Image 1 (cartoon, rainbow, N blue to C red):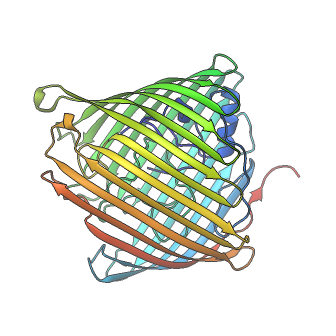
Image 2: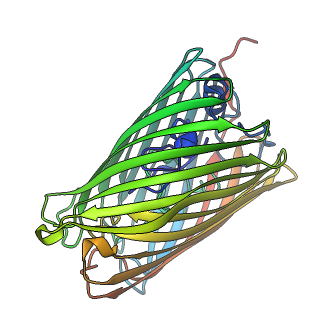
Length: 450
């Protein structure tokens, strides 16, 4: 399971608007369901199907009518977070589950990930919960997509399907059903509830051209009354057109408008965003593809009672390589956002890369790196600030039996802040996590008639 009201392509991440066009607005949480919608709507070029070879650990379903799940137990040692210098130890139990229905015209998908991290005297016990649902209805000319993702996290989402480092799910794409902003600014220990709901309607007007409209609402609420943390809401709508150029490429144009507010409404920096994006999708080969969105973005506010508008360039671009053994992505996201709960509005440049490779069916290596620089949008007339966020991780897994595997992982997060604005809710310093664990992951269960 990228745009102010979009679901990122296929199997994606759970995380104010960047400029992904309507070619992503109806994409499902599962690749097969995504392909079904594209085929029905004629709105985009579907990537060539590449079935991965079995590998250790949890994997998302690759065919309709299937369910996969995994249970993991691990031990983690972390430094630099709760006690800034000393080591903290936690014993973790986590689980993942994913289901994809067999329906071609009305596919349904669900992804759940959760964990309990029982810490020692230097670390609190933490609970992680993520659930994403998607339902599609297709007719000959119409397509309807409904998605909702809800989460409860003790920290800012960073790596893996669950969003928390050290749980053995690095390399499994996280789920995004709202705006794509790249890696967000990190908070300290700050439990929060997030929810993102999206409705998308597409209409095929010819064999190669379709129209699409999307609406979404995203909220984040911190459950502890901590100073420096900011609850936010974002409502967005978009309208766009897609046109298939040929068997391997398509173009799109999209207009998006959204409003970001804060709860309670204590900030004059509540603002509106408008953007026009132009997209290009290209399947260069069976394994290599490009999806790019680029266009101007207007940031409007009435801070101090006077209207202010700034114009900037926003983009959401991803290169992807995929074959049976290897998956790799490189992406760049630029645009305004809600401030990630740390600041009342920000503008970010984010570069992200990930890779996963299976060796000899029993070894699997996954790695990720994300760097984001977030600063103050000029239109909001905030005191100047800059937040630099770096998140990296690497994980190696080895199959022990057909259903059991072991893994080791290392994750590091570093963040620095500067400027006059209040960024007291932001994490500062270096946080490192080393984990060792075992995973029980039986074969995918098929519900299709044999």
